[in-house]
Image 1 (cartoon, rainbow, N blue to C red):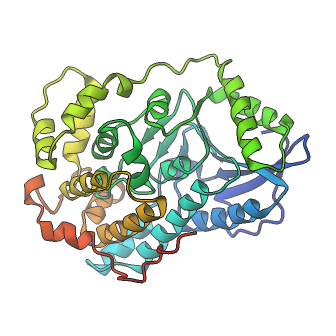
Image 2 (cartoon, rainbow, N blue to C red):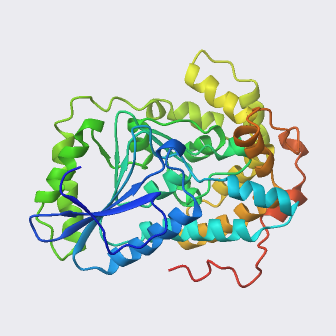
Image 3 (cartoon, rainbow, N blue to C red):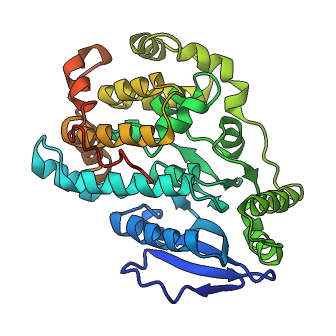
Length: 383
């Protein structure tokens, strides 16, 4: 990567995130955040969240910083999600009680996501390779979300007994038709065209265009006005988009919107019944269906209730709702069993608490939706 220098003033205790600045001809700087845990597909842990929050707050106030870029090391992933092992071990030890580990991790992760959503200055995420879960939470908050021919984007939480958090309550409910519910229930992996269609990506470049993009950013006429910088960055990326070698292609989700809306219509019981008896020659749909049906019935309920929130909640209210649900799901939902089966023992044979959608008692869901903080919710004054 050209023109980059280490941000020497930064004293983070982790090298799992690297902070650098890009010098530009305008005299302004571009801050570059690189998630640097290639072997773990750049999964986020608490130290990384904290280091990013500190540096981004400094850059937000720094008049020299015109723009921020987030990317990931290696060629496989921008960020495959959150590193949930610490959450798992704490939750198993607490046996049904909400843990301080869960409260702290989710609160600080959501505060970071909110910071990106409300940053003001342009934030560009290079969404190359795998962008899932917590990684998609980061990307959803950016003003300029760039995807490539290798992008694989999903909210796979249903497979580990969680639900689509990190702002999913906000962005899934703003997608066409029933698309948000479909993505939340099936963990379907979107390509670049799909992500652009559902509103999770703004621009398409090829993986090999990354260097060109940084070179163009170094010569851009950055100003003191964030609104102007947003426009100039847009124009610059659009110009590069017109010259890509590998075309974006068509969105399978766009072509299948009517089918998806029909499959996701009605009650959750209707949807599960429909997916259980689905007969199709479409491989992508069979895979999505199988992934959903292998997921946690508690997670189905949470994802369905989440879509009932609609668009009436503000971003702050969405993160507040999610913090309650996330900490409770770790304690009382299927999270521990899902993580055990997928990441700890890796037997891929989760034994969910309930066998099917109708077996989940209302009381279990109500318990998960009840804030453990009462009036003093930690995200009530999110800023």
